[in-house]
Image (cartoon, rainbow over all chains, first blue to last red; front, side, top):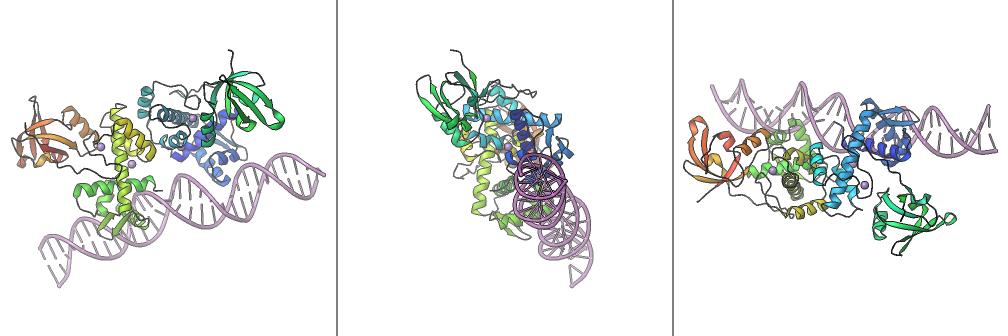
Length: 222
Length: 222
DNA sequence: GACATAATTTTGATTAGTCAAAGTAGATAT
DNA sequence: ATATCTACTTTGACTAATCAAAATTATGTC
Ligand SMILES: [Mn+2]
Ligand SMILES: [Mn+2]
Ligand SMILES: [Mn+2]
Ligand SMILES: [Mn+2]
């Protein structure tokens, strides 16, 4: 049985792997996403390798074994299904659900998860727009790109928000920067590190490019 | 922040306290209900005392402080509300929910619990018939007595099942030995350590007195 | 190629929780 | 009153997870 610490490490390693599309994750990144000191990450890498969850290449990084990837996918599925439940069924705000799911994901069994999935009607995306891995561990790789990569005058449909920061999520909700919404890109000012969007109803939002990287969208043909 | 280990110890100490109606719980009982060696229970008693959860009287036992009782009640509330959710909303069998709730109770926050309570319609009893403590930590002390204490020809209404053993719960479900059911006590044979009950529909059940102690009931006037 | 810098690993220490086995104190029985 | 038995406590050992700080390795610069 994997401890919840192990589950967290594997899940975060998977998320970084999916984001960066490179199979090895450096100890620096591991230590950053898990908020532990580098020495702790190194020690953990060794013990994860000992137990067959990852391969560890000293001074390079770790990559998930198939056993590790399987558990990591299952954790991501739990996390995102729980987030969906917390919003859809219990009515929590999408800015608070990440922290809650972070704990619950380790406590829910496969059996209960299956019932929950059924109860929720087998959703395919979580409230942040992130795809929920299937029971067999398959995840849809979204074709969407960060807002920061679109150019002026394009219309886009928001697909997902790749950031769990509470303040940013509250801002996003307030400005309707949520999955499904349509925006037109009014201006992109690289030099000022900013862009301006407009909703179909005419409201405009200013977004720093740093933040725009955290919002994934698809071109929208009206 | 109390660890889940501490939460489990406090909750079980509370349950024993409620069952035996005596405030001090011996280390032997603690080690039995928590399935640890006696030495571990003693070590834990000291550390629980150090952190203000219990008072520890060497060679006598532990009793919850008010701080400890408060947390223990909150754990019992979580446990029983979660059990209710698992049966009512997700449709799990009452024989499996105890183990599931045993994990989830440590992962659910007060905020989510409150939403869940609301969603469930603020139930007052869990699926086993045990009272759910209120948010403020008050628990209804049931007036019910073990089946083993009733005498022949009395009619009783089952109130609760005080046992989490899966096999017994499955047996109980099959024989309709569940909260709310009415039975007539046909025979009590102390010497043979057994009693016979009959449902209103005429089906009869044989129950050892050991098991009859685990079923609480009230006299029923038809 | 040597030096500075950044990333990573090593070392030594700490805390929580556990067990096995040895020791002790109280209660019970003769 | 002494011996015995049982419950409880102590001791020593172990694992998982963590940090701080020192040591090492790799990289990039001049
Ligand atoms: Mn987590
Ligand atoms: Mn999410
Ligand atoms: Mn528990
Ligand atoms: Mn119960």
